[in-house]
Each structure stands twice: as structure tokens, then as C-alpha cells.
Image 1 (cartoon, one colour):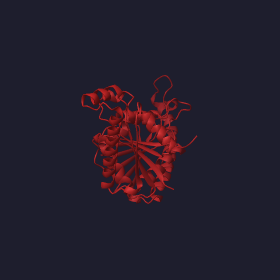
Image 2 (cartoon, helix red, strand yellow):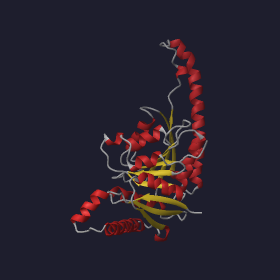
Image 3 (cartoon, helix red, strand yellow):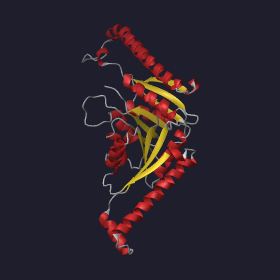
Image 4 (spheres, one colour):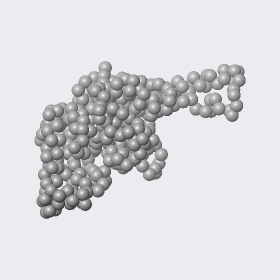
Amino acid sequence: MSSQVMIAVDSSPHDRQALRLIGNILKNQNRYDVLLFHCLQPHLTRALSEGLREGHADWECFRKEQAEAAEVLLEGAKTTLTACGFPAHRIRSEYQADCPDPAREILRRAEALHIDTIVVGRRGLSPMKRLLLGSVSDKIAQYSPQRSVWVIDNPLVNSNKVLLALDCRAESRTVATYAAQFLSSAPDADFTLLHLIAPLPPMFWDEGRILDVEELKQRMPHIAEWESKARGQVNEHLERCHNILVAAGIAPERVHTLVQPVHEGITRDILDFAAGNQIGTVVIGKKSLAKKKPFFLGSHAHKLLQYSKGIALCLVDEKGP
């Protein structure tokens, strides 16, 4: 059974970058079909004034011209995909007129068609604007339960390196499973499974006072035991995730595992690792750890969405309790 990927299309270079990336990733996989989706936003007053100024007094004529422009845009997007080698017969196109809120319409259509993955290009934002929610990509990432979301920056780091940021929850294996299915045919992709070990729990060092040398010495065996147990659990989890990727046909030598302690903070460390190692794609689970939160995006995924630059960020829906 095929899975559907929706790519939101407009005329920006960000979307062209998204099309090229997804086309190259999926061109050799027969299980994925692509829907190219474009929203026409209703700027009625401006459109009418421009139409009248140019002699287009007939509103229906103007709407027809807009529809034709949408079809040309979608045809260009299809050409970009097929130029990557993605089969034309696995592409279809739709546009929706009168969309005051494109993100809502994209999510509504994705729900109706049981879309598994939504792909959007990320606008070039200034550092200040990156702090603010409200863009189409932000809304789609926040309010898209039960589907994964790609937010693709432009310009994009030219790299085949993929980083999977994993914790030890059972649900996070869904991240590895998704990557194995979606990226297994990506040309020369090289995978790093990264786990950041949390800092030492306060119970080992926080007594509300400075511990003396003897007290610290007495606690060292307990600290060593905790660290050994924590690393053992992490290594076992990463091995399972490693095996998921290898079982999908990815060569074992292209799958690496890395465990390191948190330094600046989980999000900052992920971004620093990506920048320092020329990572092109970061894959992370988007489910919040807390129950009944108003958003569908966890804090680390949310921060990555806000602060990442030059990468394709894949926020994977983690199916679990």
C-alpha cells in the first residue's frame, strides 16, 4: 500500500529546494506518491483594483486567470520533481482557491486524504522573526497530529549526512522506523544516531550545601553505578534503532551511534553537532512528553524549528501513549 506525501507549493525558491530534496530522496521508492498542493489566498480588494486598472472588470475572468497561474505553478513544481528522477505517474496536483489561512487548509486537506507526511519550505527569517510563531510552516508543525512534517530551509547545507536525535522512550523508535522507510533509498545517506545523556541527578550532589571531599568520595561508587546503568540502557536502545535502519537495507557502515553528555542544553547541543559535522538533515520526534498539552510539538522540536538554519528538519509523529 502506498503512502502519500503532500508538498505545499508556492513560487518561492524555498519550495523549489524542498521539491528537489524530496524528489531525490524518494525517486527510487515505489511506496510513496506525491500530492502537490497550492493555496490561492483571497486578496479581494487588491485583486479587484488591479484587475480594474488593467481592464479586467470581469471578476470571473480574473479568477480564471488566477486558476491558470496556479496550474502553471503546479506544472513547474511537477517538472522540478521529475527532473530529479521522480516518476510522473506518481505525482498529482491540486489547488484551493480562497484560502485566508493556507496552513489550516493544508491541514484540512491532509486530514481528508489521510496524508502521512507534509513537506513545506521554510521562509528566510531574520533572527527576530524566528522567535515568533505564525508562519505556515510553524502552524503546520504545531497542529499536525498523526503525521510527520518536513520543514526545509533554503539555502540548504549540501550534505548527505542525517542526524537522528533520539531519547530512550520506546516511542522514539518510531523516529528510527520512519527514517528507515523514508530515507533508506536516499543516495549515499550517512546516519548518526545521537543520544544526549542528561546531567547527573541532583540527589547525587545537591544537599543544599557544598559537600566535603570525604562525602564526595563516598558517593563516587553510586555515581559510577548510575552512569553505567544509564549508558547501558542507552546503548541497548540505540542498538535496536541501529538494527531498524539496517533491516531496511541501509549498509551497517553507514549507520553510526554516538552517546555524549549534555553540555549547553539538548537543543543547543543538537544544533552545534549539526553545524560542526555538516549535517544536512535532522530527524527528531515531535510528540510532547507531557500529557494534554495544548500543542502537538515538544519543547526540543519546537526550539529546533525556531533556531535551526540550513537544514532539512524532519519532525516525526511518534505513535504511542
